[in-house]
Length: 234
Picture 1 (tube, one colour):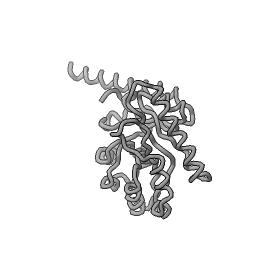
Picture 2: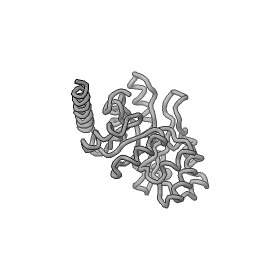
Picture 3: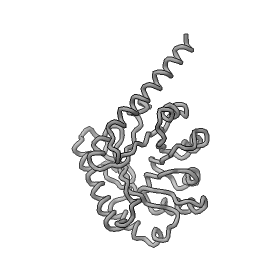
Picture 4: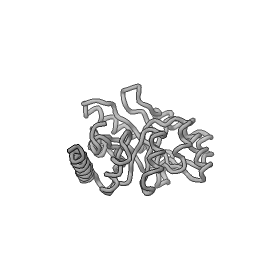
């Protein structure tokens, strides 16, 4: 009886993940990519989404991402979406497809160093602090400009800045969330025009999660980071 219960549960979970992915993807414009945030979920759960055809996953801890990379299919694109400590960069530098959460020049220097060691250019997004919560990480607009104007950044050859990321305040006030996302889009436009006007690769805005991704899309997001709406509550 327990075996049948387990089989039924796995079947139901597979169908739920497939349905969730399908429903979310029908809401996304062609210009928006879905990052399925798989943090804390076991590899066999991630495989259910993979078998359903999804291949872009996001993790928030390098020490959790590395073992998943080692055992899961190699055509998965792994995104680092959480706060990244400098001493953890070396674990993901050989394979990470995009780091969303670069919040300091110090961290970018380490990513560049590890990119050099692995003979690759690592795509990154600069994280901008747009929330009213002080606990969230990120650069101010002014700090972002200082970073991009620094001699250290100018000399980096193993990182490529592809855009910006931001996390809105955790609130039920959707108007506040919208205003914060709109601010990030305005920062993106200003930085694009000032520093990346002729660089097509600077094109990504990562904003919007399970509770607010539709607002993010309306305000210009090109990457949405969705976890619980796909995999269920952790």
